[in-house]
Length: 315
Image 1 (cartoon, rainbow, N blue to C red):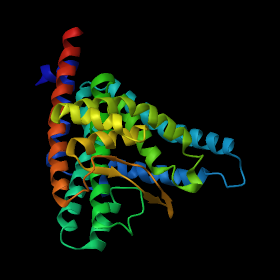
Image 2 (cartoon, rainbow, N blue to C red):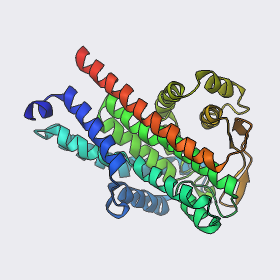
Image 3 (spheres, rainbow, N blue to C red):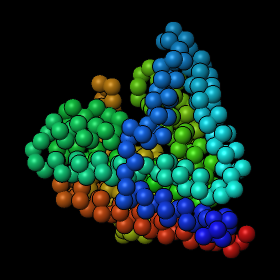
């Protein structure tokens, strides 16, 4: 055991498998989860330093950039020093990765939506799905709820599961920490909030750069667990060429279902294009989506394990 803990290449592989196993089999209670505290701190920081509407966009940009830097930098530096100075850094890396990889909560919340959407419990279903998405859910139909839940699970698989594990495998635990905190900050200071429109732009811009790599990796994983021709076909035919629409088009095409479409944020309706297949989402598609993403999780872990083994051989 001491040999495994003292060898970085084997330790990283062990940490990866352990974090995924814990995420699949156990849910860290939200009240005691470290990211719950970070969400609270980020939200409070935004409230305290957000300039009033009287200030220009540049002041909002500066305030948003400095707020994120002041809040996140000390935590990253302290944890980096702790891991660097530890006799067995793999132990602290494991705890850190388990905390960062909170995709299990998304899957369990999705199952709650799945269990209620077919029972005509519209109010309860909207309450469950509202915990998965940033949009307003009070007027969603059953089809709208199903689409919102599927889209959220697929995108969270990319951004949380693939993103955290990929940055950990390629660049180490501190890179995964920085990525997850930037992503969290971007989501808490949501750009669709009119008051956060400019304030959130630095965090959102940085998060947008960070998620390119996980998006490419998740696309490769989807190709491996689906029909590659369908995935490419619907990505090319997508009427919108932004990253989110392309990702939704690929997943919708793989299942031959229609995703995207209008969404309401802070009482404002945004008419996003519909992408993916031509068939309307059904209840059974929620089950198939969950199964497809579960398969994608297994493939992603296998690919990242190969990456870690290859890196260890090169070093």
